[in-house]
Amino acid sequence: MSSIFWFRKDLRLQDNEALSAAVRAASQSSDNTVYCVYGFNSATFEKLEGIRQHSLSVAVKELSNTLDGKLTLLAANTHQELAENLVKACSETGSLEVYAMQSFDPEGVAQQLAVAKALEANGLGLRLVGSAYAVLPGVVRKPDGLNYRVYTPFYKAWNQLAQVTPIELPELGTAWGSLKDQSVRIEPSKPSPIKVRAGEGFALRTFSRFRERALDDYDEKRNRADLGGTSHLSHALAHGEIHPRTLLSVLGDSNAHEVFRKEIAWREFYADVLHHYPHTVNDYYEPRFKSLRYDSGAHAQQKFESWCKGETGYPMVDAGMRQLLAEGWMHNRVRMIVASFLVKDLHLEWTWGAAHFEAHLSDFDPASNSHGWQWTAGCGTDASPYYRIFNPILQGLKFDPNGDYVRKYIPELRHLTDSSAHEPWEVFDGYANGYPSQIVDHNTERNESLARLEEIKTK
Ligand SMILES: Cc1cc2nc3c(=O)[nH]c(=O)nc-3n(C[C@H](O)[C@H](O)[C@H](O)COP(=O)(O)OP(=O)(O)OC[C@H]3O[C@@H](n4cnc5c(N)ncnc54)[C@H](O)[C@@H]3O)c2cc1C
Image (cartoon, rainbow, N blue to C red):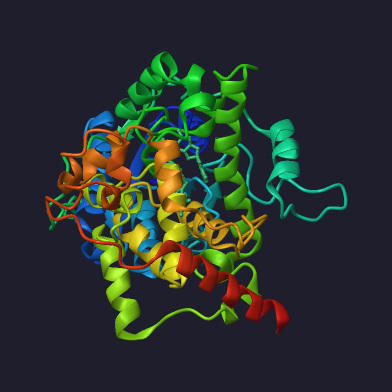
């Protein structure tokens, strides 16, 4: 029997455990064909910002190219519609099984349950093989069998279990097949601020460049927003254009390599946490923070808009928010700074910021986004304590010491040639080019935040 391979957030051929399983299964059949499909939700796609539409469409088109165009898009506006289309694909190709990677986020889980149910009702099967992680979420457990809620011990246990050997696609003379109906297309309807580069080949080249140029200094440079010290692989990991096994397989024992391994593990930790607490995809991990006093109403909305546009008057915050709009990506350190500012200086709920990130981040990942936000807001797992409030000016001076990052994204500050780009209020001509003044005073809002925290402590 031929098999169907359903691509999900694993848009690659190499180091793809589920695809390798489908190829092996097909090789047992007389026609040795794997029919490749991708479930496309055009309704959701239409709502995405341009950068996300383009990054998904380039990733899918690149995958299709590597399959010699033999990738069929199936309409998947609801889980049921996708399930029915997979059943039809099986009957058209005479396949009895659909192979796919297992998802662990709430949306992916609901999708695979609906698909499994529909296939089963038709005497067909869904084979879920592997995941987007080096260890399946749910597998790393404490000696007492419970899941970890703190990162460091999770990391130690995870490191013992992590798969670090890439899985090669078996060469068994398999042919890629496509279905008759090729009418579903993925075409962005909105412009993208940048020309998106994506796909498995691009991901592998990005990783190669990172290994040659930055991996060995990763521990020293990864926090510097002005240096290209990180891998920029988050888009590729989010879309599955590369698997963490491929990354882990080249790491040695140096401190730089160990720090990089630990960052990969943060992604896995958050996926594990979301697997155990699926409601935390958009709800509080630490429920008492729900009752913290947040701002609302027209003034809150105004502050939020200034934050979204990068017009708060705090250069490091504004540079980050403008980088997000310009590139669909933001440096990790700056993500923490802007998130802290939203919650602790503007007193807005983290969910507002998480939704804005979801709309604009080309590397959007439900687990890393929700828990990255909750960590910074103080309501997540082993969260940064709520009273630790980032000073956006000192953070800027520390992680962009010459002001290069800020100047790159804020044209109004380009005339300030040194670190004074972080403190335009200290310079005679700091506001000469129309940079906005601060919408709030950091020290005042810091005290306000601490006072609000006291209120929930005493409740
Ligand atoms: C508020 C907030 C929201 C975030 N939202 C997302 C998101 O939607 N998608 C996303 O992929 N990451 C998110 N992150 C994590 C992190 O900022 C990005 O993964 C990182 O900036 C991507 O750049 P890079 O690939 O160059 O990272 P590198 O430093 O090269 O790290 C390599 C990989 O490790 C993983 N990683 C690194 N740091 C983290 C981290 N703190 N948490 C989880 N995984 C990590 C990523 O997959 C990353 O690609 C968020 C962080 C914060 C503070």
